[in-house]
Length: 299
Image (cartoon, rainbow, N blue to C red; front, side, top):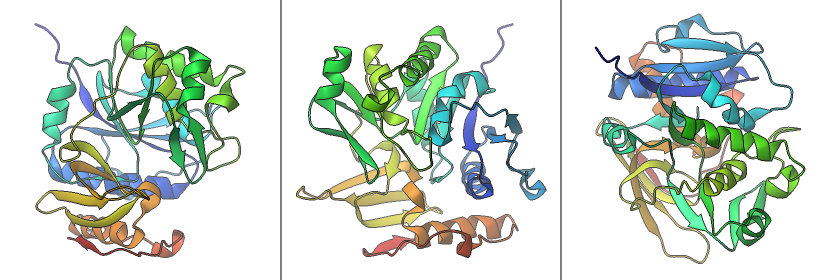
């Protein structure tokens, strides 16, 4: 009898108890929409809240790697996941719909899968904390393109091909090219993870999936102009517009509230999930507020 492959979700909550609180919200949203297990990785700085015990199938306590900080711990996921097929999801995401089943089926057999685009020139991996030039990275590693994507959601399978991605990320991170490839991120000693993964994937010939904006696994909130976010009906649609570009409608199943923005909307949705589970509501005073400047519809 062939043993069935295990599959499930993994989130990371290191260093700060607030990450565990928002990972709990992610778990609530997943349990509301589907039945796959959810595991959370915590380090010894986190005191696990027993109120969350029923939300996670596994709570995995991980030793710190002194060379890694914050987002770069994603480079360790291959050796930490308990699953054969893993959907890694950032803690500041919420699942809106059981239609995520479509993506589990779509990605089966892929060593590593992300949504994004191939880029050979111009600003890449841009955020308020830094930016890189795609042409410079391509020339540095003799690549035709780099894979540009948001690493808030990454799918991978337990295979040699997948391990090669993580090994390549660590190789680049530990090389003299570290500062040329990426930039300082949120905390002292932390680097943005996407540039390392983007170069590694391109080096191994793994192109990102480039879905239509209307049918995405991950919908991100930067450049959001207007949105409908209804977790009861599973309606996740946002209008995004970058400066100088036309507005574009994105729709999908996982909403990545990058930096918890729009914060008021995120908290309303999180509190709805918590109230249903009879958990204490979020302590909004613990988080820096974000001022909304655009109309948002939500439920």
